[in-house]
Length: 266
Ligand SMILES: Cc1cc2nc3c(=O)[nH]c(=O)nc-3n(C[C@H](O)[C@H](O)[C@H](O)COP(=O)(O)O)c2cc1C
Image (cartoon, rainbow, N blue to C red; front, side):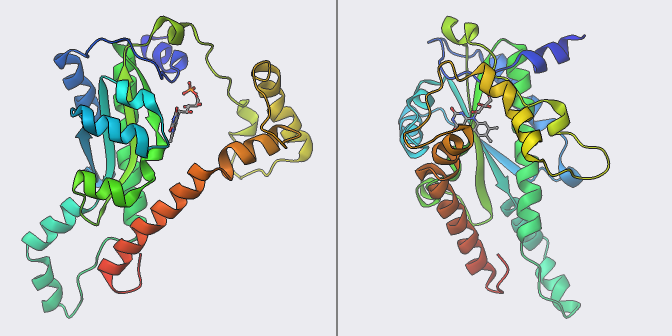
Protein backbone atom coordinates (compact mmCIF):
# COMPACT_ATOMS: atom_id res chain seq x y z
CA UNK A 1 0.00 0.00 0.00
CA UNK A 2 2.78 2.37 0.98
CA UNK A 3 6.24 1.94 2.42
CA UNK A 4 5.24 2.91 5.97
CA UNK A 5 2.49 0.31 6.08
CA UNK A 6 4.79 -2.26 4.47
CA UNK A 7 7.18 -1.77 7.37
CA UNK A 8 4.46 -1.92 10.03
CA UNK A 9 2.77 -4.99 8.54
CA UNK A 10 5.95 -6.98 7.96
CA UNK A 11 7.69 -6.24 11.29
CA UNK A 12 8.34 -9.09 13.68
CA UNK A 13 10.42 -9.25 16.82
CA UNK A 14 14.08 -10.07 16.29
CA UNK A 15 15.97 -11.89 19.03
CA UNK A 16 19.21 -12.91 17.28
CA UNK A 17 21.50 -10.30 15.77
CA UNK A 18 24.33 -10.20 13.27
CA UNK A 19 27.61 -9.26 14.89
CA UNK A 20 27.52 -5.91 13.15
CA UNK A 21 27.34 -2.49 14.79
CA UNK A 22 24.60 -0.01 14.01
CA UNK A 23 26.08 3.02 12.21
CA UNK A 24 26.01 6.19 14.29
CA UNK A 25 23.83 8.12 11.80
CA UNK A 26 21.18 5.37 11.98
CA UNK A 27 21.33 5.25 15.75
CA UNK A 28 20.90 9.03 15.84
CA UNK A 29 17.92 8.78 13.47
CA UNK A 30 16.30 6.04 15.59
CA UNK A 31 16.64 8.14 18.74
CA UNK A 32 15.43 11.24 16.91
CA UNK A 33 12.33 9.30 15.80
CA UNK A 34 11.64 8.44 19.45
CA UNK A 35 11.93 12.08 20.44
CA UNK A 36 9.49 13.13 17.69
CA UNK A 37 6.74 10.85 19.05
CA UNK A 38 3.53 12.43 20.33
CA UNK A 39 3.85 13.28 24.01
CA UNK A 40 1.21 14.31 26.54
CA UNK A 41 1.11 18.09 26.79
CA UNK A 42 4.40 18.18 24.89
CA UNK A 43 6.03 17.46 28.27
CA UNK A 44 8.18 14.49 27.20
CA UNK A 45 7.41 12.56 30.37
CA UNK A 46 10.14 10.01 29.69
CA UNK A 47 13.87 9.48 29.61
CA UNK A 48 15.92 7.16 27.47
CA UNK A 49 19.19 5.51 28.47
CA UNK A 50 21.43 4.18 25.72
CA UNK A 51 23.32 1.20 27.16
CA UNK A 52 26.77 1.24 25.61
CA UNK A 53 28.54 -0.55 28.46
CA UNK A 54 28.87 -4.30 27.78
CA UNK A 55 28.93 -5.16 31.50
CA UNK A 56 25.58 -3.41 31.96
CA UNK A 57 24.14 -5.35 29.01
CA UNK A 58 25.43 -8.55 30.61
CA UNK A 59 23.74 -7.63 33.88
CA UNK A 60 20.46 -6.79 32.13
CA UNK A 61 20.56 -10.14 30.33
CA UNK A 62 20.39 -11.71 33.80
CA UNK A 63 18.12 -9.30 35.67
CA UNK A 64 15.54 -9.30 32.86
CA UNK A 65 14.53 -12.93 33.33
CA UNK A 66 17.74 -14.43 31.97
CA UNK A 67 17.51 -13.58 28.28
CA UNK A 68 21.08 -13.91 26.93
CA UNK A 69 20.28 -12.26 23.58
CA UNK A 70 20.08 -8.89 25.40
CA UNK A 71 23.84 -9.01 25.95
CA UNK A 72 24.40 -9.55 22.22
CA UNK A 73 22.24 -6.67 20.98
CA UNK A 74 24.35 -3.92 19.37
CA UNK A 75 21.88 -1.27 20.55
CA UNK A 76 19.93 -1.39 23.80
CA UNK A 77 17.65 1.48 24.72
CA UNK A 78 15.86 1.76 28.04
CA UNK A 79 12.66 3.77 28.21
CA UNK A 80 11.65 5.28 31.53
CA UNK A 81 8.41 6.89 32.58
CA UNK A 82 9.81 10.07 34.09
CA UNK A 83 7.99 12.62 36.22
CA UNK A 84 11.13 13.48 38.18
CA UNK A 85 12.36 16.00 35.63
CA UNK A 86 9.18 18.07 35.77
CA UNK A 87 8.90 17.71 39.53
CA UNK A 88 12.46 19.01 39.93
CA UNK A 89 11.71 21.84 37.54
CA UNK A 90 8.55 22.78 39.45
CA UNK A 91 10.70 23.06 42.57
CA UNK A 92 13.34 25.12 40.80
CA UNK A 93 10.55 27.42 39.65
CA UNK A 94 9.43 27.95 43.28
CA UNK A 95 6.13 26.15 42.83
CA UNK A 96 6.28 25.29 46.55
CA UNK A 97 6.29 29.02 47.35
CA UNK A 98 3.41 29.59 44.95
CA UNK A 99 1.38 26.82 46.61
CA UNK A 100 2.20 28.19 50.07
CA UNK A 101 0.91 31.62 49.06
CA UNK A 102 -2.33 29.93 48.00
CA UNK A 103 -2.46 27.97 51.25
CA UNK A 104 -2.01 24.70 49.37
CA UNK A 105 0.58 21.93 49.51
CA UNK A 106 2.48 21.24 46.36
CA UNK A 107 1.05 18.29 44.50
CA UNK A 108 3.36 15.34 43.93
CA UNK A 109 3.25 12.88 41.03
CA UNK A 110 0.45 10.35 41.48
CA UNK A 111 -1.08 7.31 39.81
CA UNK A 112 -2.47 9.12 36.76
CA UNK A 113 0.81 10.96 36.23
CA UNK A 114 2.71 7.68 36.21
CA UNK A 115 0.29 6.14 33.70
CA UNK A 116 0.56 9.14 31.42
CA UNK A 117 4.35 9.02 31.64
CA UNK A 118 4.25 5.30 30.76
CA UNK A 119 2.16 6.15 27.69
CA UNK A 120 4.73 8.73 26.62
CA UNK A 121 7.68 6.37 27.09
CA UNK A 122 6.05 3.51 25.18
CA UNK A 123 4.92 5.67 22.28
CA UNK A 124 8.47 7.00 21.96
CA UNK A 125 9.80 3.42 22.06
CA UNK A 126 7.50 2.32 19.27
CA UNK A 127 8.61 5.22 17.07
CA UNK A 128 12.17 3.99 17.57
CA UNK A 129 11.13 0.44 16.63
CA UNK A 130 9.54 1.56 13.37
CA UNK A 131 12.43 3.87 12.51
CA UNK A 132 14.87 0.99 13.06
CA UNK A 133 12.75 -1.32 10.93
CA UNK A 134 12.93 1.21 8.09
CA UNK A 135 16.74 0.68 8.09
CA UNK A 136 16.37 -3.12 8.14
CA UNK A 137 17.28 -3.14 11.84
CA UNK A 138 15.19 -5.54 13.89
CA UNK A 139 14.14 -5.08 17.49
CA UNK A 140 12.60 -6.76 20.49
CA UNK A 141 10.88 -5.24 23.50
CA UNK A 142 11.90 -6.51 26.92
CA UNK A 143 9.07 -6.11 29.41
CA UNK A 144 11.14 -7.82 32.08
CA UNK A 145 12.95 -4.53 32.70
CA UNK A 146 10.05 -3.90 35.12
CA UNK A 147 11.44 -6.70 37.30
CA UNK A 148 14.12 -6.26 39.96
CA UNK A 149 13.26 -2.61 40.56
CA UNK A 150 15.73 -2.27 43.45
CA UNK A 151 18.65 -3.54 41.33
CA UNK A 152 17.77 -1.37 38.33
CA UNK A 153 17.21 1.70 40.52
CA UNK A 154 20.74 1.38 41.81
CA UNK A 155 22.26 0.36 38.48
CA UNK A 156 20.88 3.43 36.68
CA UNK A 157 20.86 5.86 39.58
CA UNK A 158 17.12 6.34 39.35
CA UNK A 159 15.33 8.92 41.45
CA UNK A 160 11.85 8.08 42.86
CA UNK A 161 9.63 9.37 40.08
CA UNK A 162 11.38 7.43 37.32
CA UNK A 163 10.19 3.95 36.44
CA UNK A 164 11.74 1.61 33.83
CA UNK A 165 8.70 0.75 31.74
CA UNK A 166 10.39 -0.88 28.76
CA UNK A 167 13.63 -1.82 27.11
CA UNK A 168 14.20 -2.39 23.40
CA UNK A 169 17.08 -4.40 21.90
CA UNK A 170 18.05 -3.57 18.33
CA UNK A 171 20.27 -5.24 15.75
CA UNK A 172 20.50 -6.59 12.24
CA UNK A 173 18.52 -9.85 12.03
CA UNK A 174 20.37 -13.09 11.36
CA UNK A 175 19.24 -15.10 8.30
CA UNK A 176 17.34 -17.46 10.59
CA UNK A 177 15.44 -14.51 12.10
CA UNK A 178 14.72 -13.06 8.66
CA UNK A 179 13.19 -16.37 7.61
CA UNK A 180 11.19 -16.91 10.78
CA UNK A 181 7.44 -16.93 10.19
CA UNK A 182 5.70 -13.82 11.37
CA UNK A 183 3.48 -14.66 14.37
CA UNK A 184 -0.29 -14.67 13.81
CA UNK A 185 -2.60 -12.16 15.45
CA UNK A 186 -6.17 -12.60 16.65
CA UNK A 187 -8.80 -11.56 14.14
CA UNK A 188 -9.99 -7.99 14.23
CA UNK A 189 -13.56 -8.78 15.36
CA UNK A 190 -12.28 -10.10 18.70
CA UNK A 191 -10.17 -7.06 19.43
CA UNK A 192 -11.84 -4.05 17.82
CA UNK A 193 -15.40 -3.17 18.88
CA UNK A 194 -17.81 -0.49 17.86
CA UNK A 195 -19.03 2.01 20.45
CA UNK A 196 -19.17 -0.39 23.39
CA UNK A 197 -16.92 -3.05 24.90
CA UNK A 198 -17.88 -6.60 24.08
CA UNK A 199 -17.20 -9.52 26.44
CA UNK A 200 -16.43 -12.66 24.52
CA UNK A 201 -18.51 -15.84 24.76
CA UNK A 202 -17.10 -19.36 24.85
CA UNK A 203 -17.92 -19.64 21.16
CA UNK A 204 -16.12 -16.35 20.43
CA UNK A 205 -13.03 -17.62 22.26
CA UNK A 206 -13.10 -20.85 20.29
CA UNK A 207 -13.16 -18.86 17.11
CA UNK A 208 -10.54 -16.40 18.37
CA UNK A 209 -7.99 -19.10 19.19
CA UNK A 210 -8.69 -21.17 16.09
CA UNK A 211 -6.10 -19.21 14.12
CA UNK A 212 -3.43 -19.59 16.77
CA UNK A 213 -4.16 -23.25 17.40
CA UNK A 214 -3.91 -23.93 13.69
CA UNK A 215 -0.75 -21.90 13.14
CA UNK A 216 1.68 -22.43 16.01
CA UNK A 217 1.00 -25.73 17.81
CA UNK A 218 2.91 -27.83 15.31
CA UNK A 219 5.92 -26.92 17.43
CA UNK A 220 4.00 -25.82 20.52
CA UNK A 221 4.22 -28.38 23.28
CA UNK A 222 1.91 -27.67 26.19
CA UNK A 223 3.56 -27.16 29.55
CA UNK A 224 3.30 -30.22 31.82
CA UNK A 225 -0.15 -30.42 33.37
CA UNK A 226 -1.81 -28.15 30.80
CA UNK A 227 -4.65 -29.72 28.80
CA UNK A 228 -5.38 -26.81 26.48
CA UNK A 229 -4.00 -23.50 25.24
CA UNK A 230 -5.66 -21.46 28.02
CA UNK A 231 -4.09 -23.62 30.72
CA UNK A 232 -0.77 -23.55 28.89
CA UNK A 233 -0.77 -19.75 28.66
CA UNK A 234 -1.87 -19.39 32.29
CA UNK A 235 1.05 -21.52 33.47
CA UNK A 236 3.59 -20.17 30.98
CA UNK A 237 2.83 -16.47 31.28
CA UNK A 238 0.22 -15.33 33.79
CA UNK A 239 1.24 -17.37 36.82
CA UNK A 240 4.91 -17.70 35.93
CA UNK A 241 7.72 -16.62 38.21
CA UNK A 242 8.54 -13.66 35.97
CA UNK A 243 4.97 -12.33 36.20
CA UNK A 244 5.05 -12.61 39.97
CA UNK A 245 8.43 -10.87 40.12
CA UNK A 246 7.20 -8.12 37.80
CA UNK A 247 4.26 -7.41 40.07
CA UNK A 248 6.41 -7.49 43.21
CA UNK A 249 8.91 -5.16 41.62
CA UNK A 250 6.29 -2.68 40.32
CA UNK A 251 4.64 -2.70 43.76
CA UNK A 252 8.01 -1.89 45.35
CA UNK A 253 8.44 1.08 43.00
CA UNK A 254 4.94 2.32 43.81
CA UNK A 255 5.64 1.94 47.54
CA UNK A 256 8.79 4.01 47.40
CA UNK A 257 6.84 6.63 45.42
CA UNK A 258 4.10 6.51 48.08
CA UNK A 259 6.57 6.84 50.95
CA UNK A 260 8.13 9.85 49.31
CA UNK A 261 4.72 11.45 48.90
CA UNK A 262 3.95 10.68 52.53
CA UNK A 263 0.27 11.44 51.99
CA UNK A 264 -1.00 7.96 51.21
CA UNK A 265 -1.07 8.57 47.45
CA UNK A 266 1.06 6.13 45.56
C1 LIG B 1 5.51 -4.89 26.35
C2 LIG B 1 6.26 -6.01 25.66
C3 LIG B 1 7.14 -6.79 26.36
C4 LIG B 1 7.86 -7.82 25.74
N1 LIG B 1 8.81 -8.50 26.43
C5 LIG B 1 9.54 -9.45 25.80
C6 LIG B 1 10.60 -10.10 26.47
O1 LIG B 1 10.90 -9.84 27.64
N2 LIG B 1 11.31 -11.03 25.77
C7 LIG B 1 11.05 -11.34 24.48
O2 LIG B 1 11.74 -12.18 23.91
N3 LIG B 1 10.04 -10.71 23.81
C8 LIG B 1 9.30 -9.77 24.42
N4 LIG B 1 8.34 -9.10 23.74
C9 LIG B 1 8.08 -9.40 22.33
C10 LIG B 1 6.81 -10.22 22.19
O3 LIG B 1 7.03 -11.51 22.65
C11 LIG B 1 6.37 -10.20 20.73
O4 LIG B 1 6.04 -8.89 20.35
C12 LIG B 1 5.18 -11.12 20.50
O5 LIG B 1 5.53 -12.46 20.72
C13 LIG B 1 4.62 -10.98 19.10
O6 LIG B 1 5.62 -11.27 18.16
P1 LIG B 1 6.04 -10.20 17.04
O7 LIG B 1 6.53 -8.95 17.71
O8 LIG B 1 7.14 -10.90 16.27
O9 LIG B 1 4.85 -9.93 16.20
C14 LIG B 1 7.61 -8.07 24.36
C15 LIG B 1 6.72 -7.28 23.66
C16 LIG B 1 6.06 -6.26 24.28
C17 LIG B 1 5.12 -5.39 23.49
